[in-house]
Amino acid sequence: MQLITVHLPKSYIEGLEELVKEQIYPNRSEAIRVAVRDMLKAELWKK
Image 1 (cartoon, rainbow, N blue to C red):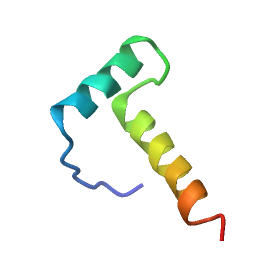
Image 2 (image 1 turned 90 degrees about the vertical axis):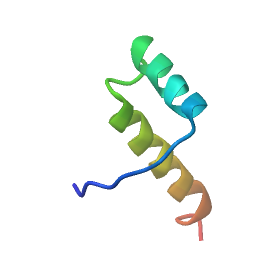
Image 3 (image 1 turned 180 degrees about the vertical axis):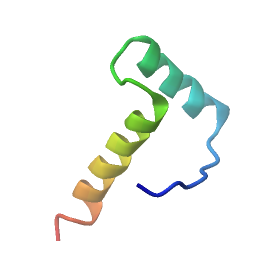
Image 4 (image 1 turned 120 degrees about the vertical axis):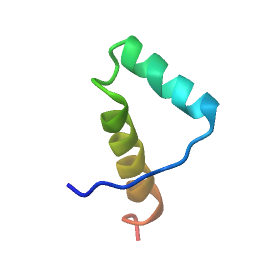
């Protein structure tokens, strides 16, 4: 994997923390990977 830096609004980070706290995702990075994957599936790979 390649490391990137992303700047997010505080409310997004708080939401990610809540998903991790509720054990929906193991960590913020995994939640972000899933979100990016789903966006690419919906917006790019559907073509």
